[in-house]
Length: 442
Image 1: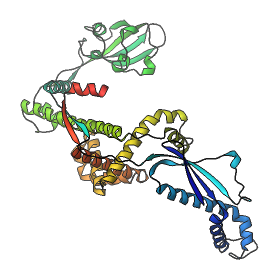
Image 2 (image 1 turned 60 degrees about the horizontal axis):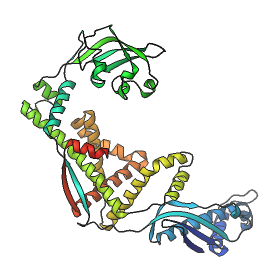
Image 3 (image 1 turned 90 degrees about the horizontal axis):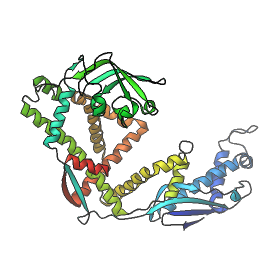
Image 4 (image 1 turned 135 degrees about the horizontal axis):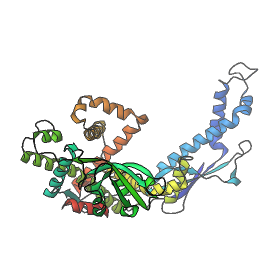
């Protein structure tokens, strides 16, 4: 057997394998003899058919199976010996002029395309610098949050006439054409000029306006229409008021405190404000951590400076998902895929070099954290804690075990990022909410 590597570029190559009769025939002969002992052929007792007859009937399929087996083992072993890390799977190169004649050929030539990155090192020490972000909750955000809570939990009323900030329920109709929709209009989300047309109006009153009075995005955000419904709206419209909805602000009393944080968790206005600030800060602490880690990943990716074999990977993705994705799909999704792949290579290298491993206990705890967050967002929270083990088991056994592997990878990534932050130089930077929003928009 002869195996050769032909590098076309820094990250793409061909592997050529040449098989002679001596490489595969002994295994084929052994397989034929073994098959002859088991096979049933009409006219012969089981296992008594001549090997020559077995070869005539099954020889080609056995030859193909054995050569494929030899190719697979040889290719895998050869790749393991190389200094590079293969990406995806080797892709067979099929040439019309190399069509195989399994009946007559004795020697066989095979070629595979591969994509790879060379082995690399990424020292993790204080020579590497990154930023640790900390979002600071200020009094302005606390005040805005409390105001929103008071509005959200206030008592709903249906007054006779419209005031600023009300929700107006009614029918929007085009003066020309067939357009007609029943909507709930949030007056706080349209222009002040348009909202003033509704002030003082009551049930069954009609407000006339023009489609151009509604700014971009307000059909969806204020009127609740779909983008499809709103795209062709133009000209004169009318709004027939059917009802007016208003929410009075909730009072800062024990009933309000209990609705927000549960019975008797806070008992005074001062305690309530402090609890709101504490809850907001906890939420933004998580956002700070996520943002810090994402920026740290970018720093590590830049430091590693890995170049992927893009053409190969796109072809491999298309072949591996044949019939499920198009070339356009691959092109659109490739930037996100390549970022994740590069990070995966870096994370695995840091884990290997520093003996970082996620254990089963890490997977269990990571899954519990995920489930707790899901329950908390649905308001179920602590009531589900007693059934936590059942939820964890059900999730990790799902998706044919892939959920477990995903959680294992996620837990290891967490450990890698924690290790990196311990070893490198982290410069702390405090951010206001506005500063944070500006960073996200960049």
